[in-house]
Structures are given as structure tokens and as C-alpha cells.
Image (cartoon, rainbow, N blue to C red; front, top):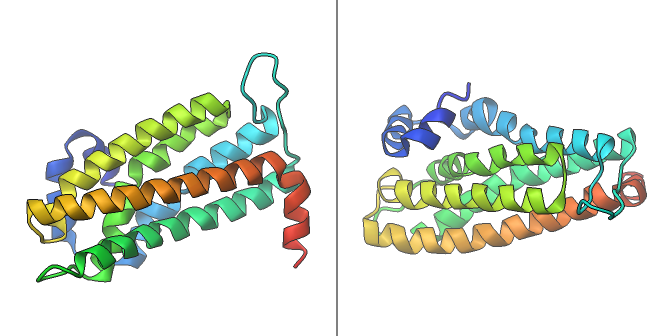
Length: 203
């Protein structure tokens, strides 16, 4: 489990080749990578919002959730993260279809799962959920994910560097939009979940 995390952060070129040789399935990716790493921001946010509370620091008030509301928010947030990985994978697949030998949907989703690794790890900052700290951690995670994306997409998806640049740029733009949507949902769920979530889950 998590055998590629350190390699992607320290020597991504070598690690991409190793991942490519494994011919991994989407089920294996989720079981051994995504499901575990996606829990990091969820668990940290659960701890942070119940023990510290969301806030800007200083004299600003902190917003805490009770355990039940935080649990519901965590479940919803976890599902949203897992769905976002699949969504980015399909974006990559859609962009790559224009080329002569487009990669399969399986490879695209697997690729999306691995490039999200730094974003998952940046969720550790949510254990002390100051807004500016989480934003800074998210930016660092996004930059590292973008680096993995630009570095890995040409040979992992079997396309040229020029084609890879086009796909990478579009994927990064869509990924930023998805990230912004997740951040918005996060603020709503973890900030106002005590009011909204019991109403939503009654259906």
C-alpha cells in the first residue's frame, strides 16, 4: 500500500515509469492509494473542526462542529473527493481522444489518482483549520500536482510532449475549477454543516 507516494514526491520520473509497468486496475488504485490518501484531509478536518474550529486566527471567532455534524460532513467530503478523481480522469480521457492513440479510461483515472497525491497530503493542514494556512497548503499541493501532471502525462498516456502540454494545461485548468468547487463545498460543510447536514441527510 502507498508504495508510490514517496517516489512521486522525490523522483517522479522514475516512479512514473514504475507505475506504468504495473498495468494497475482502477480497483487496485482505489484500494491501495486513493481510498487511504483521500481520508487524510477528511480525518484532519474532522479533528480540526471539532477540536479547534474554522477561523481566520486572531480575534475572529472560530466555528466548531459537534461530532455528529462533523461525521456527516466528513462522509460527504470523502465522497466528493473520490468522485473528483474520477471526474479529472474523464477530463484527461476526453482531451486525449483527439490524438491518434488515446489512452484508455482506466489509465486516465489511474493517472488522475496519482497526480492528486500532493493534494491529498496537503490536507494535513486541516487538523488546525486556519483558513489562510489551509489555503497555503492547498496552493503548495496544487503546484506539486501540476508538476507531476506536466512531467508524467507525455509518456504515461503514450502521447508526445507537445500533445501532453495541451492536455496538461486543460486538465490543470479543469482541476483548478474542481478544486475551487471542493473548497467551496468544504467551507459550507465544515463551517455550516451543523445547520445544513441534518436537513440534507434526512432525505
